[in-house]
Image (cartoon, rainbow, N blue to C red; front, side, top):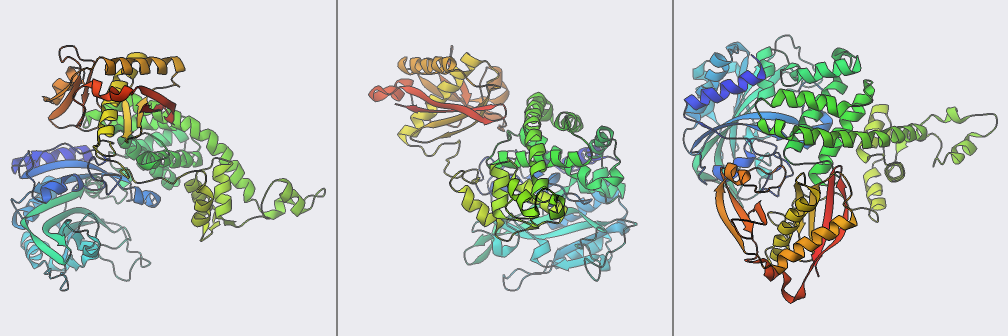
Length: 629
């Protein structure tokens, strides 16, 4: 049974139990400023876990794509990935432990036919200080189902408590959480490694056990003075699809499942190397390309800020590891196609975005390979052993001075050198550190501090995705911002009219002073084209067109020509703003608002639309900054 079949069987099983299948949420949270990415199945459902009614009802089932950037450096062993699918079933104040645990046990043992004697269960040992009791109830259910008593293990909050922030002490006020009960699969043929612990147990890192499911019993809400029970406790189950597939294979190497192994086989063919001899490199590439594809499908493009920076880092690390196995070109094009072919039967949005995503990755790879080759040469030159500079015609010190090295045969990557490699040679900071670790070169304790000091005058560090923004990219709902918001709609339509329908919004940020608008376009916009855009916008302001909106069914909105932003996720119905006569509109755009009532308001006081700057934002994406003057 492959991973795709497990996903399908999971949906069918819980549909029979009265659950409604809901679509995955975007990897980029739409209304959660606390995080850059969707890292768990419960994250998009927090409002409903807190009591809001879900339109699909009280019993839900889904497969949520997740991305955890913090795990990037861990990828390379047989079980860590940054990207994964989390199968989830949810009870929003409906059923609880008595139904959830037996259902999951039945799914594992009857549907997936996993042997009962290989399954272990863990439960929460309780916390007297917090007033939260030991979960003897779950333990009793597991015992009744047939789990042997010595295979039921109790752990503290570090392992068997779940919230977005982790342990109870880290939770913010208002955050839901609760004890959980996990199931582990014990792989055959894996011996315990004593370097991890004296005695093996389900949460041991030796690789003998793999967690395959976690039933979270959302029973509490964090308050300033402790915890209070939720009015109706919920069930939040998450089971990693990749890990379940590994268990079904009885193989702890998660990279040999049907969602990943075709990528490995493709890398073997491209490189002429064998996976068994180059596991780390191939695992990193396979994981990073899966993550990169889904991030791009959900609207992220390579850039130097926030989510775009993380995507760029994924691609760059994949390209760097590809060099280690002899792949010197066309990595993104060929491997991305394999990833798309794996997922497009089950995720139509992947196939829909395929052409645009792969083209963007090809451009990114071409640009980075030039930087990478040069940067690696410079890095290697800086760290050559001093004896390589001994010659008859020059002393060691003279040779090093001539080459511009700051000291003979450096053995430490300092902040100054980190900055020099970045600033003068264009070598990314994370790759400088990674190359140092690979070569056993020490990284100075103050390297980041010194680097940041030298960067202050040249460039601001990446900032949180939502810093300084209001929902929808608006700084606030002031009169000036609302005027520029409607103006941005006019500009979007004008750009399509002047440049072509390939123009798609990639992002926007609107303040009282200016609008900043990112859009897809393969080349610099000429001054003549910018002038045409300005003239169209100012003409529509002068015409004092009406601005109206109505709620429409999403497919009908797109069928009637409504524009949207690349990567945005929409429900069954959307709000569509129309500028002009609805029968012959100038602009139709999916948007949450707010807007002026008619375009003449924008031009009050003699204001005119003016484009002040046009520049590249990232590969294949242009950026316009404009004002009302």
